[in-house]
Image 1 (tube, rainbow, N blue to C red):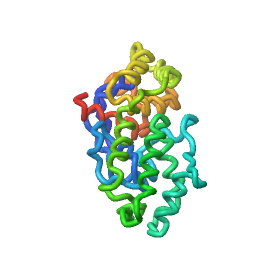
Image 2: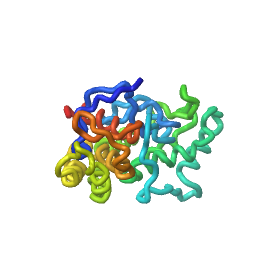
Image 3: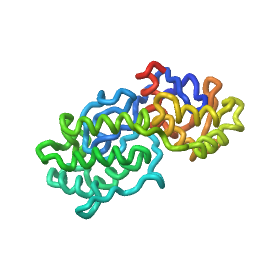
Image 4: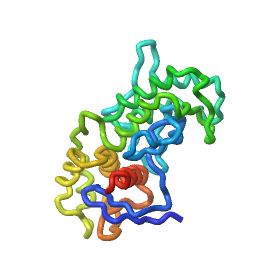
Length: 249
């Protein structure tokens, strides 16, 4: 049975003290691959295929900022990537294109970086691919390392050019928390500041986007701080916790 051990959630800036569920967003693989997303870019495992975002819990889903990545040769980059690996016959690759596009759209501010990784993986020879333990096609860990590391870093830390303005999402999240006795003070300004200037800005943004979809009924006070119930936003929270832990948070 999972347990919650979260010290504080103030302005969506997590201080983590451990959990039974160490899931998290994984930006590469047939269903996320084996590379764990954390603030330590390049320390993930197998790079995977760029097929999907493995959440280990909830996810933010798509976004109006994201969208299908087209290719000059017709079809999307995910179509081409999945056409290449179809010959492997991996048993769980039926939703390959959908999962691949979900990886690109998961964090809209990382879509270009994730598309570059999928494009790199699609260009690799079939000898660089295999069916992983979960039955999905996955790219060798030695291939497209720079692109995979850039994707992991973007999810955790945000893109090189900085995060987009998520003030509206901060306002929606803080409004949902506002009726709770443990509602954080200066919630909106703290949230906006952490996304703009704090470490792990990408992960904070993912938690915020997910939190903006919740209501007061979705939160509970844990250690005098609002925490989503029933595993909601758990993947995003775990990603943020791991990133902060990696950076001494």
